[in-house]
Image (tube, rainbow over all chains, first blue to last red; front, side, top):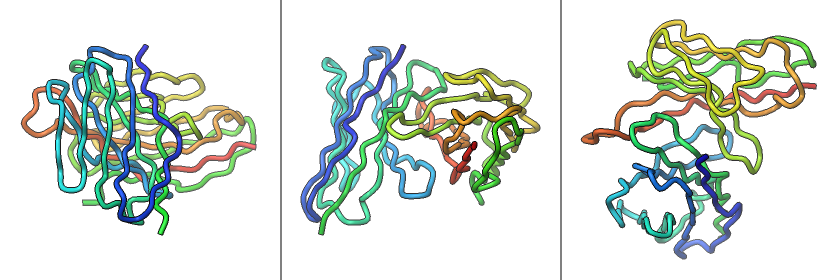
Length: 111
Length: 117
């Protein structure tokens, strides 16, 4: 079945860039997503990328997709303490409604 | 709009007790989902409902039942709770990505934290 993997933890200094990485196994993935979960809250969609794109930029967020290596990354420029959260990578395949989520990366922003 | 609401926020059960987790959305979405979140395991889909009157199993349906009562409400029932069901439960509803033929945005509720002793 599909599998989505992420490293569990990342720490950065305030003002630096953060790069959160994700790998997936389903070659038929259509959309790939990044969700953010703040403490005690549900997940919130940050951004997504269609599988025929290799980059998407949205303000401080840059998503890079390497379809050949099945590698997705999320870069957050000028990381702030408010960016501290768990970031989940997810994918959907074809017209399937279900998302497959990674285990999440806990981003800690140090002052 | 309240978005997706869940009740209760917290619950402690003894092994063997039953309970129903409630979920409602006011965004007129067709699709709704129940997930559980366990440390280091991401979110795993328990059940989903593509439209009112239909439900389907997800990755981890054993020990759970669901009811899509109407378009707004999707409940999750634990008939005989077990310690392995200690988790955080999230309900979500979804709409199509704007301008896209496929792909969805899922909107999540705040979660129900369940402890089974």
